[in-house]
Amino acid sequence: MRRTHPVHAVRRSGGSGDLRQGNLAQILRFVRDHGPSSRHDIAHGCGLGISTMTDLVGELRSRGLVRELEPVRRPGAGRPTKPIALDGDTWCVLGVQLDMLEASFICTTVGGRELWREQVPLQLLHSGPERGFALFHTALCGQLRRIPEDKSLVTVHIGLPGYVGEDGGTVSWCPTLDWDGLPLKTAVYDTLYSAGWEDVTVGIDHDGHLAALQAVRAELPAPMPHVAVYVGGLREINGGVVLGGEIFRGYGGGAGDLGHVRVHPDGPACACGRRGCLESLLGPEQLLARSELVSASEATRLTTFEPFRALQMLVEAARTDHPGVLAALEQGGAALGVALDGIIGTINPQVVVLGGYLGLLRRSLQDALQEGIDARIAIGPFAATQVVSLDSVGVNRVVLGAAVAARDAVLQDPLNLTQVL
Image 1 (cartoon, rainbow, N blue to C red):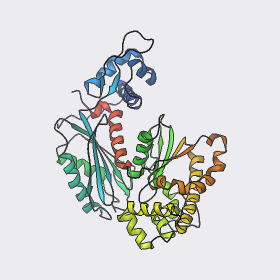
Image 2 (cartoon, rainbow, N blue to C red; image 1 turned 90 degrees about the vertical axis):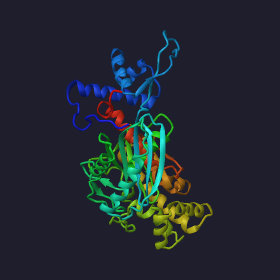
Image 3 (cartoon, helix red, strand yellow; image 1 turned 135 degrees about the vertical axis):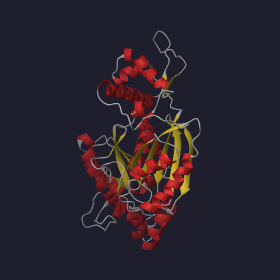
C-alpha cells in the first residue's frame, strides 16, 4: 500500500504540537515496555492526567498504532477496563545489516510481528562506495518488492560495520567495505523513491550499537536495566552503551568502540594503527594466530570467510585444553578485565553483557576477567554491577536490533510517520 503524505515537507514544531507528539510517544513507549495496560496505569506511568487519555488514545487508535482489548476486571476495582495494547499492524519497517559478505533483512510490523527475514549473499568486502552500493541497491529493491499490498513501509534502519558522520547519513569510517564518504542515507532515499516509496524515513547505526540494543531490550530478563554495556561480535569486538533502553551514540556517533579500548600500551599492533587495543589481544583472528592453532594467514582467512568455523575451532580447542588456546584466552581474559574495569568505573552500568563469541568463550575467560574487575566491584557504587553472558552466537542481533530501532522511530514520531487510516 503506497501512501503519499508530507512526511518530509511538513513537520510539527513548537507549542502544543510538540507537547502532543511527546505525550503520544510516551504512551506508545509505555505500552511497548509494559504490554497491555489500563488507561489509568498508562496515565500514572507517563505522568499524564487521566482526563487526557480519551483524546490521546483515540488519536493513536485512529492511526492503527494501538487497539483496545476485551474488558477485564481489575482486583478491587469497579467497572471492567479495556486494556490498551500496541497494534501497528498496518505499518511495517525494514531492518538491515550490511556485512562484508551478505546483507540481512527483516521486515516486521510496527507492533513487532515478523513478516519475513532473508540473507542475501553480497560481496561487499572492500567493494568501494560505487560498486558496493550498486549491489546493495539491487538487493534492497528485491526486498521492497516483497512488501504486501496491505502494508505501508514507514522506516528502514541499517546496521553498518562502521560509523556515519555528524549528519547521520554520510559514512565516515568503514574500512571493511571501503565506503568512506558515501552519502548512504541519501542513496537509500533515492532507492526508496525509485521503488515508489516516497515517504519513508531512514536511519543508520554502527552494527555494534544495534546488537547492544537487541541484547538489552529483548534478551535480558525483566526489568530492563537503565544503564547497560554490551561487548560482543563475530569477526571482531564491537559494543555499545544503552541508556534507558536507547542507544547512547556520543557526540560523533562513536560511543561504545570497546574493541579499541587500549589495555596494554606496549601490546601487539592493532589493525586500527595503534598498539595494545583489546582487539589485538582478544579478537578471534588474534586468538587463532597467537595460540598457533592455525597460521596467521589462515586465521585471517577463516575469520573473514568462515567466522563460525573459526569460533567452533576456538571453543573445541578450549574444551580439550589445548595449551596454546588456553594461554591465549587467559591473556585475552586479563585484557578484557582491564577494559571492563575502566568501563565499569566510567559508566557505572547495572549490567555488562558479553555476547557474540565472547559469550561463547566466557567460561575460559572468566577467571582472568574476574581478577581484573574484583577491586573495582569491591567499591560501593560499583558493587551491584553484574557481568552476564549470552552464548547464542547464531542470533543475528544486528538485524534484529535494526528492526527494534526502526520500530522505535515510529513510536517516537507517530504524527509525522503515520497518518489517520
